[in-house]
Image (cartoon, rainbow, N blue to C red; front, side, top):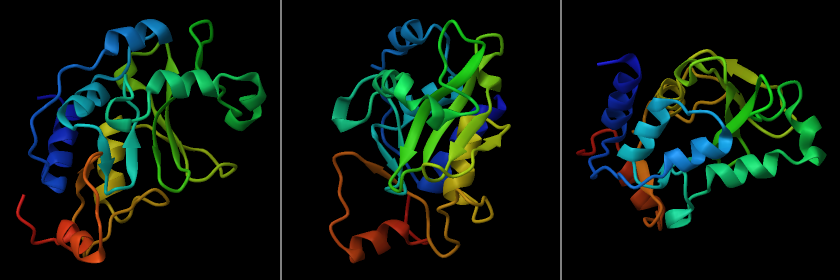
Length: 196
């Protein structure tokens, strides 16, 4: 088993996620439009987790907007606008005609944005994660897989400034169609003694 799949297994263990996998994502279309393949761990994570969010906080961009999830290609097209060029300095947005640049793969509930530093000359599974907590904040580069980054974000309280982990709470995954109507439900989902 490769290291990236181990991180997926860790994410499943820490969240207690036990739903059936999805197989209908059209990654080939997305990769053709981008002009580059995407990291296999991210595609596998999207396959194993239906559209939703980690800790009701971190959303992954998907090939389609099914179940109200955001589309990866739509986000990439939006970011490529010349009027936003300074926002992505010093990296810029990835384009098939460029050496390297950012491709967004996720965002969170407080304006955090998560990207790969994509480069067509580098194997996608080796792309670093580049993240920004709030618009205008400094960029942070992480030389790790997407799934390791996500695991650390939801399970490692020391992963500053991106952690949402609380030692007294258990991480969870919330499908798009499920809500948390009150504090009692939140406490049940984050209860460290909760059954998987």
